[in-house]
Image 1 (cartoon, rainbow, N blue to C red):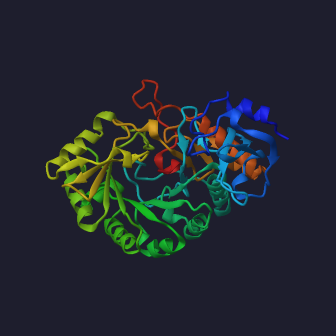
Image 2 (cartoon, one colour):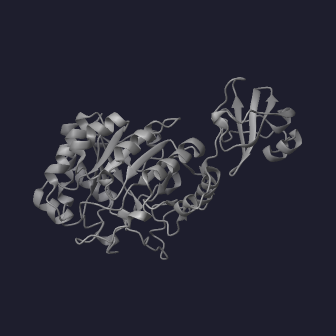
Image 3 (cartoon, rainbow, N blue to C red):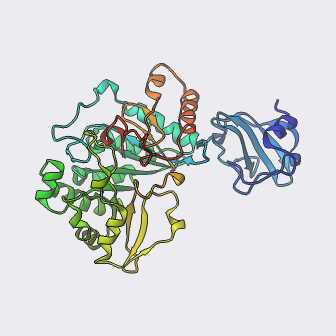
Length: 417
């Protein structure tokens, strides 16, 4: 039995308060908790991951108190037959909470974009090292049901190359509480899969499109597939996978002159354009800051043709893109200044690689291996604990401007965007 005195020691001194993890309206002071700590039935869905759950009384009503791998949890119980979702959260030491899970389904890709990999490609991960579909869904389920993940985005490599993609999406969409499910893709094959993915529960897509010129596409991607990408975009829109977001990396002397044309292309079709600063994540380690088209340069180019007004920053939240209304709106364009305008302080993302490694930052140099633990018989509690520990060690920022910065050994295709 957990006593009131023990709970009070965890909660704090009498009169203390303020918002707490599972208590949107703030918690009652420790002195307000009374009773002997009546045990709460463990079979309630909201008690997954909660050790020694007890129900305490306060002037505000019944409160659930329990211990987790992340510490004390506190949350209101609105009635005897129900309870608020009280789960551990993926909180790092700086107070940021990861709710957006990026899952790489494969490191393979059918393009060879120069800012990602060399023309000859890379040595792909052997199939036995990749997570199976069941392993992926198991880890995603732990994230959603136990750790507070609310959005799952499948990435690659190229996720459309994963044969079980539709099934994985359907099983993810069927989780409760239901997460937002999205996909980042190069669009090749999307014309065929857009409708099945929408039917499976996919909400929206981000499609990479760096140019509208066929010759430039070949120069950048080393494949003649521009028509397939454009067809995939149209199919995604027709299938209702909206908003269809278009991701563009501008490269100096290659496609930086196309910013206006690309935005106009999206405006005419109802897509949402996102321009992204090139990041040091290429396999060749050839990134140079002086060659990067900055957010300021992108906005300068766009303002030559459009009136851009900063959108409400509150609406941005933890999203990486700074949003601007185009010609008064409602159409918007986003600029992701990962290098020159870092948003690390609001980051809510965590990544799972195709071979089962947790990365708490895109630029992390360390990983936490869930695959080995899972294949060695770890139960869901242990996997959740490892995940919590991995996120807890997240650094304050990516440190690109720090002289000691080291580019990750994995390229973007092996991490997942």
